[in-house]
Image 1 (cartoon, rainbow, N blue to C red):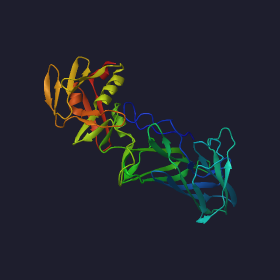
Image 2: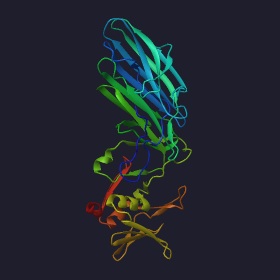
Image 3: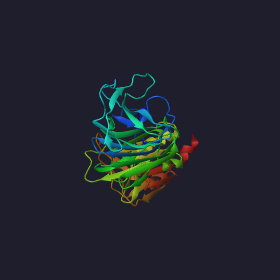
Image 4: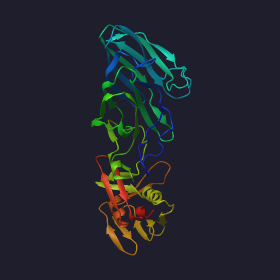
Length: 375
């Protein structure tokens, strides 16, 4: 397995740099055969439950194994990997680890992996005996620390399905992720489209090899957040979710560049200009300036300039007309800035003969300008 963080954005300015910047701590997975593929023992079902808290996450995984042959004893290994100071795997990344067979605790030994081609640091190994045609319910519970990216402040949790070396395919694997996070969080699930019910996300796989890494990334953010996706319309279906918990987050980890405000979609003027530059393929295609005398913000794209004034419900298109806005531009205070100007999206793109799509339910937006077609 490769340890990585999931990028929550696609092309343009949203949450930048969430890939390959940090390591998860304490990633586990399904029980697997220690050597080869077993001829008679099948992993029929798998139930995985992740409880994500601000400082840790718990995993409870239950497996139903069926022996289709004669009596046999198998060696099962539960994989463990992670990142941090200890890179040789000599210290476990799990705060605790327990396992049972049919509800009874059984001894388990942590064994380091010494194979150069093995992506896991260690295995929690135990022996399980089956009589002919016997079924066992095997369970594991562990707690570990979420991965983090210090430069962004995002967190991530992971689980690796590794049941591919038992007999045949797995009939069904059910995954449930419950979030116990304060405030509002934006969550991305690594391309896996999940069903949301409150603060629970679920998904199931059927008749599959059960070989997959599931990664979830989450950040505390502001109400009304929108992802700016300047990409083909099918990106509006990417799996991004909002989780709302009691109280307030310790700190905002992601300040969105677009958001709903007073029932309207707003976008940071700087983010809009930067996105135009990237999509048009030329730096300084969109130029922002400041009029000291009028205290106006100006945005120029090619031969057209628009003016905004914070708190004023008008937008001036120079040499053309004045547009009355349904909601006024506003300054949002953010760390390390003197304030960020947000302007209404629809009149802004219309001023440059463009169009926009906003899906408030999916928390995404996209805009298009004629200049994009001139590349």
